[in-house]
Amino acid sequence: MNQLIRYLLENMYLDFQGEISLETVRQFLRGDESREAKALLQKLIEDKGVDDLLITLADCCKEHIRTGVNEEVLREQLSVYSDS
Image (cartoon, rainbow, N blue to C red; front, side, top):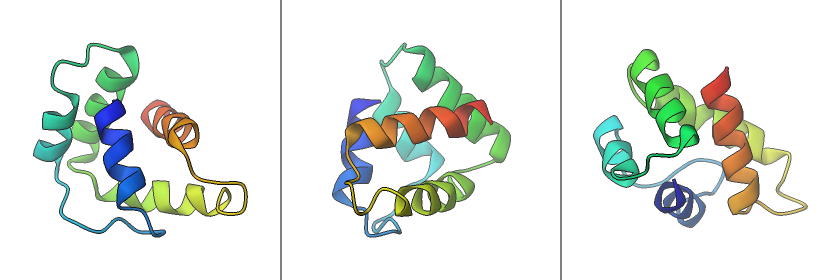
């Protein structure tokens, strides 16, 4: 989960540059046995990809631009997305 969050932070500009696919997310989450990682991966499989995730994250992170988009904000947003 930490590697995925770091990747998203490094590539954020209210959109995410670079190519990220479901397989890329799987690689980032490989070996992460946390509940959050499993829930996110399950949600992405149900959604058949990462497109909805990226759009949702960009929209939700707009609210945090003034106060800062950081690892905690992304972790929270990924968790909310996974649970939706």
